[in-house]
Length: 341
Image 1 (cartoon, rainbow, N blue to C red):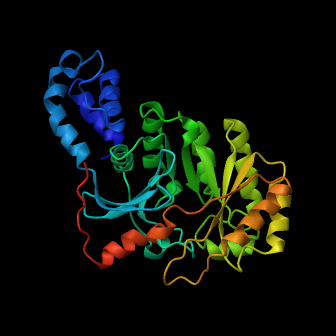
Image 2 (tube, rainbow, N blue to C red; image 1 turned 45 degrees about the horizontal axis):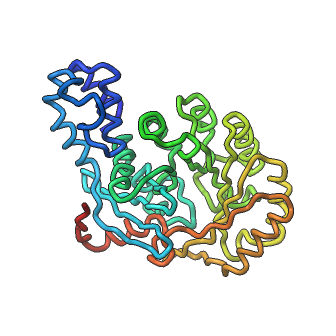
């Protein structure tokens, strides 16, 4: 289900935009309908009221939690089942956040990512994206949504932008707390500035070397790191949000002094945060995670030279939860349904 298709169905039943907004707002906030001064019986047209139980059931059936994997850091990785039997992953993050998936699989093929090993299977609809947030809100409060799960959001722009608009307008989530993560598809720099809701932007950098970036992200657009940062800087100045540059730290690949010197040259003076994330080991992939002491030393060295650097640990390290791993394991063995309240 796409959000605009639901709006079309409601309109055909006689709903006005304010009626559509109310129904969608109740859903995305996981609030139910019998609250506030305007209860459905007093507010919604009769054909809409009569159809509402079926619509609620359809929305509720978009996604369900198949497995929950809590971690010591307060996060929890969720294996989410969709109506057609496909699965995606969501992550409940510490401090009231959730990471959602925008595709089943991914076409970019990042060499260090388990999701990319399967290729793209299908797009996740705007309704299924929002349903992941609703599932998360049934577990804990959600004040931030990051589009950093399975898939490349830029390859599913219509659905992702629909979901972002609903979350930002009716979902009670600050626009700067909606984080669109991308490898740097040029369409992003055209569409995001034109949106009603302008999310924060996270750009996958990973290296300052154009040739190495092409090897690590073989099907990403051929933007050089310098060109990517220039595009990011324009969006940062437009929105007033710093760009989050993502750097997966790979032992012996992008952690050398030459890279660090180039990072300083590339990002000094930019409205940016460098999120440095030590690699989350994936069985069968040839990359290694550097030691935490080394990662701390790298982050401190960059910070001392004027680069706002945040060293982050990938959520759920202790449950072997790198993005795509839960889905890969589920494909290899049956998943027992975990009942949740």
